[in-house]
Image (cartoon, rainbow, N blue to C red; front, side, top):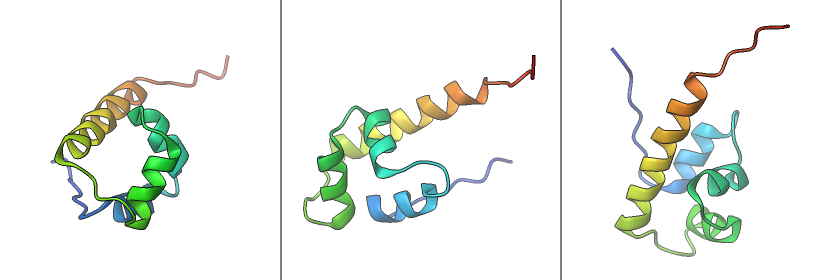
Amino acid sequence: MEQKHQFNNIGELLEALSPYISARALARICGMSESQMLQYKGGFKKISPKNIARINEKLRTFADEISGYTLTGA
């Protein structure tokens, strides 16, 4: 069974992702500006439900895309 993680804010999400991707990378994946992502992370700007849905959708799409990557060593 797949374990799911839920976060209350972008800061918590980015902390969990930090070994793998940065705020800059998450912004790029989600089609947002790095500045906007950092404002959400710092709590300077409240994230809208629309952007929460957008981030969730883009994270799922990104995960699906990279799950098919394989290194063959050739």
